[in-house]
Image (cartoon, rainbow, N blue to C red; front, top):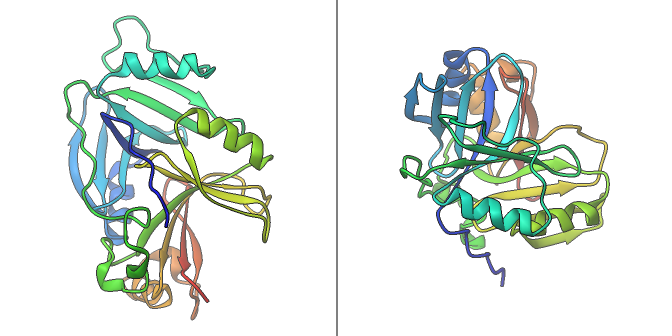
Length: 257
């Protein structure tokens, strides 16, 4: 039986994505089953959205950027723990910064940020992802939190050396849930709230948000019929990778054969 790690205390996990056009991006994600949680213009313009299980922070910025982000109640303690584990940050808060944020990068260039959530303004969605669903429910689309895209499965990251990458993520508190050698070396890791897939492959070159569903063929057809522009050229497919307005990638994969 799969043992899910205990989530780090006081942590909220999200994926941060920059966009030059917040409203265009939000309209796109609404088509994928996401709704707005909050929006603000200070200290920068952002819209926080969720599909009930996955939290995404859309931040207005013309420079493309994607990161696994943690909002942390005791940021100083967490930073001290990571530095003691040998983690070096590539970005630290400037004196007097309105938002305290630390950023580190994985051996493969993946951005991971830790942001002060001392006021408790961000909370983890209560819906179930593939990590927290009972495996016997994977085959029942009625149990999916996101009825449009299916189950959030992983934040897929390409890596050069799987074992080197695993060692790095373990320093962050992640545990290996599964490790495979075919069709190339890959592994699924989690710290109890975030899930990353490490893929030693050249089939893709940047992180991808990945959803799975038993009825993905029908979901893709419904998205196309609903006017999702990125699917207009598809025909009778059961798995697809779509490009978001921010030039990021989302996998919609059929579960099983």
